[in-house]
Image 1 (cartoon, one colour):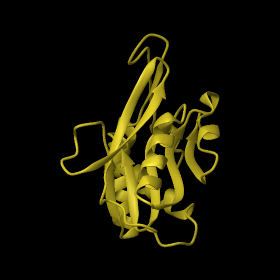
Image 2 (image 1 turned 180 degrees about the vertical axis):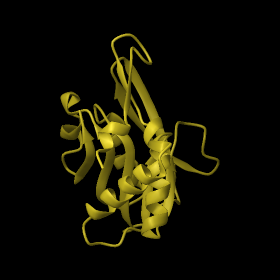
Image 3 (image 1 turned 45 degrees about the vertical axis):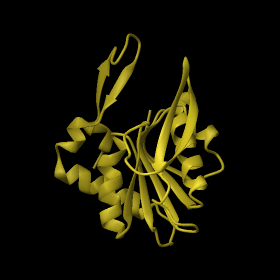
Image 4 (image 1 turned 90 degrees about the horizontal axis):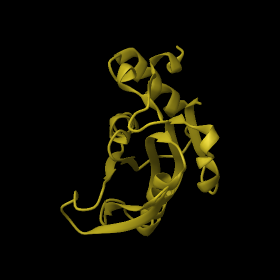
Length: 170
């Protein structure tokens, strides 16, 4: 199954000059979603995964399915103010300015094996911030998964200290 056939590009969204990679067609097809999960699981090292971390918001789709498949817990990483209990916060740089992400402080126990997942690896800022959050929780990052990697933005370089797997490359 060619997963790239399930990605729709929307020109000039969310702003002029951007070619947005829309995963909605993939989400509409249960066989394509099953294929994504199977491919991610096949690319994992032979180690038990305790928690799967998904980044807000499109990372939640497959992170929660991966957690179910791996019999692991699901941990959401969210924008500030969205999580109700005590959180760790990590700021990261954007093209113009900065942003931050949060994780519940008790979401990951020391030494737990963690799989991080998001839909797109672009510049790597969100991914690196999420890795730092997992490390603040003293989790062991086994791998970072991405459905799509925008190779031309070199995001992989920012997270080169971690094992990275991407299913679709542009």
